Amino acid sequence: MLTNFHTHCNRCLHAYGTEEDYVQEAIRKGVDQLGFSDHGPFPDHDFGFRMPYDELDAYLAELDRLKESYKGQIQIFKGLEIEYLPFYRPYYQKLLNQKGLDYLALGQHFYRTGKGDVKNIFFAASTEDYVDYAVSVAEAIRTGLFRFVAHPDIPFANLFAWDDNCRKACQIIIDAAAQQHTILELNANGLRREKKVYPDGQRCPYPYLRFWEMAREQDITVIVGSDCHTPGQVYDDTMETAVKLARAKDLRLTDSIF
Image (cartoon, rainbow, N blue to C red):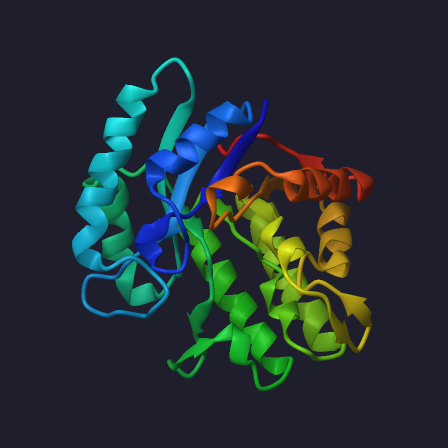
C-alpha cells in the first residue's frame, strides 16, 4: 500500500498547490491513503511559516469535501503538523475532539526550554539545546495526542559534531517513543535538501543515520513521510529512496498511522 501522511499545501504560505492538486497527484501515483498535515496555526499567536488561524475552518471543510468527492479512489485523512507547547494542550484536544481532525503530527520546530523560554531548534547554540529539545518531544509523546513524530532527527541540521549530548537527546526521544508505542517518521524531504559539509562529512541535514541506528535497537515503528511542499513530491523518487534507506537500515516499517 502506498501512503503519505505528511502533506502540506499553499495555505502554509511556503508550499505550492491546493489540497485538490495534491489529491489528484496522489491518485495519479497510485497512493492509497493521503493524510494532510499542513502547518497548524495557533489561535492567539503567529509563529510564522504556517496557515493563518482564520483559514483553519476552510482547510478542514475543503478536506471534508475532497473526502466525499474522491470516495472510492483514495482515502483522505485530516491532520495538522504542529509543535507542542504545554500551555496549548486544551487547544490540541479541541482540534481532535471538536474540530474533527483525524490526527496530529508532532513537528517540533520550536519548543519550550527547561527555563520556560521558547526556542527554535534550527538556531541551537550548542548540542546542550538538543537535550532540552528532546525533553520537549518526549513530553509531547507522553500526552498521547500525536500519531507520529515528524523528522525527530531534525536537530542534526545544525553544524555541531556528535557528542554525549547528541546521544542523550536521541535516547530520550527513542525511549519515549518505545514506551508510548509512538511512530517516528523518517522524513524524505531532508533528502531533497542540499548536502552540506558537517563535522561527520558531507550529507543531507536529515535523516541522520546514527539516530535511526539507535531507533532500530529498540524496534521502533517507523513510517516514511514525504513532507511534500509541491504536488509532485507526494510520492516521488525521493520517497522511494527514503523507503529503500529505511529497509536497508532494517527499520520496522509501517505504511499507515492508523
